[in-house]
Image 1 (cartoon, helix red, strand yellow):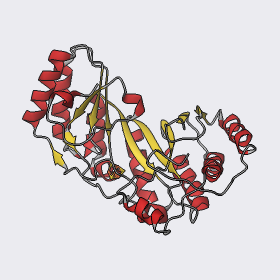
Image 2 (cartoon, protein in one colour):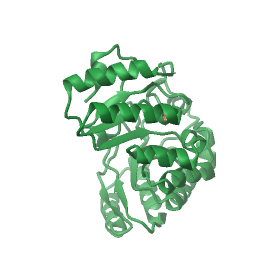
Image 3 (cartoon, rainbow, N blue to C red):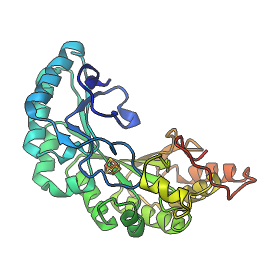
Image 4 (cartoon, rainbow, N blue to C red):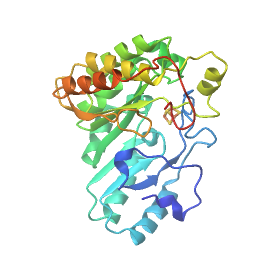
Length: 299
Ligand code: SF4
């Protein structure tokens, strides 16, 4: 449910797959970081924080069309960049406008999380913030630096833990193949380390898509970045999963449209089954080395 349909939309709207039934409220437009070399989402969108009056008008209009809304997702790319007072005011308006509201969720960048104090995060949880979505992308410092994520692996761990320590659920994403052939081993092992250190509530493994117009796509076209083959993507996923060690349950998904093999389970209990499923598929590959890439994904 995308409410900017009624407004003058600026750029495309993105949301996590699990927010398909939520009202998408764009409290910011674009991404204030907008520098990750693999990301095309907000490349041509100028970042701006919507003024409170503009957001209030959107909420009033949405409540007229969808009075029974139960879930709201705050977009765009890193809406958590907004000051805590402003987020609390928005959440308060949402509660007043939608009596059946039971869940508010948001995209947050690692720097946005690190900037908030534990008290601010606790206040957001008390106000109804249920889930923060965080793109870990990689746990390898060299890969994080190369793709311009803007944080180190240690900072990513600190950000993830901070969310969980505040009692907010954390849904994380990692990107298979982000280190290319050059760093596939390190990307797998270090990402497993970061995920293990955070122990997120949810983990999604997406497969790298080399979108046109991105620096990473350009690097691949110029031979400076060697994308993985479908076989190598699965080997990397297997390596990552094998080395993830968690003490608390984590819902694992690798069933994004970009993924070759749809996988789902709960870690750590389903780990052996997930590894066996990957092994079964790996035995069927004849061509193990040919990479393919296009806008739709590597397959
Ligand atoms: S922080 Fe997220 S939305 Fe912003 S450029 Fe990076 S991947 Fe894209």
